[in-house]
Length: 552
Image (tube, rainbow, N blue to C red; front, side, top):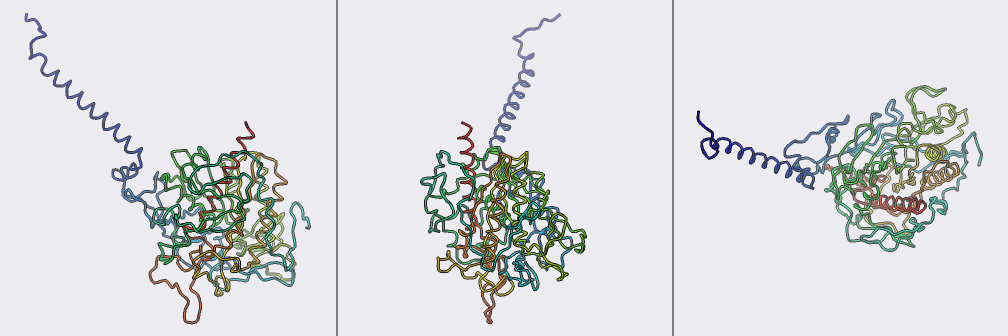
């Protein structure tokens, strides 16, 4: 019998080689795993992810507009943002189109498209009806746009009503100690400072982002990308008279909103503001697209912050079924019932920015307590007295939705009511020669064009807001972000004729002096609209600090 010797090299050569190979391979595998985890966690992670996993995975919406694939966790394409991407995600109720409102049937919740057609939801100069002394809008020729009654008041406005109300009650802010964020152009921060009286000052430091550094910018608002020759409209900051409005600090904002959700709810101007917020935040961190057609959702992983947008053109419930003498197809607005399309979600939101008003210039029927009480661009029986016009309907709708927010038993967040956004169609309406072409800097005091419709809509909105505050029963906060007068000066901040990248588009007046089709309602990006989100940041900061102070 032969004995085993540990010194015999022939008995150890194979096992030792195997052990060496296993050790080497295992070490290399661990190294690769650690290295790949590190790369994906870094800013270049999106590029690495694209290199290994993807080419452009796009889907088309019903209008043929390229959208990010909602199954994707990001909207970075081939390692770089797709700067020509139009990310107007439509909900299941459809996009607003540019058809004559009188020919619509099931399209009542459609959102403005981004194809450069005539802007349908632009405000027009109101006409005073002698029969009922109500503010009504002239019918579009082609495309485009205190007495208590039950639980709502139907206020009648006189012909000379048009001045903006006092802003003494802009919010229900309570005094608190404030440390204030540090950063560029951030001087003293007064927690009680009035943000809404001041002036626009030149700021050559440039905007918070570039038009080519944000992949979710709707093409119609991409003024530089659409060939606008001037860009000084990007270089103005709003300076309150008694304090400073801090420049937006993306890192501090995301930290402030850690674990929270900010929702923009409303019309296409709400979309404009939501995209501005995303463009600002995008410069610090690329979010993950977790949205769908009912709700746009962008998730910022570093702080678990979610930015949401929900389309709701009037903020109140709407139906299209026949009702009394109103036939099927025409929109019926139940102005005393909030839109459940988003009300069902509000317990999930910490901050909500509401935007509405311009759709009240469109055809609709107003229903109060299940009774038809008025209409806009629709009132077939002139023998019937119309009790509620479009301005009064707007005021009631504001009171309806804000009361619902202020009394919801499961909502304790912050509701910011962004006041009526002014348009700047001068010399006529959108379809009667109105224009903002050639405006390259903010208006001087003597250049302001009085807009009676904007003024009265602002007043109705503020009245609805103050009434809702009196009914508040929950722990939420209501804020009135009063941008109407501030942005009356910014006639230079609209796309005007630069609504599409079409190199053959008309941008100058014709031989007959007629201006080209243009958008004087939405805002260029980057541009003045970014100031809205600086105000949102400041209002949210104040409220969170107030709550922290009261809890300590």
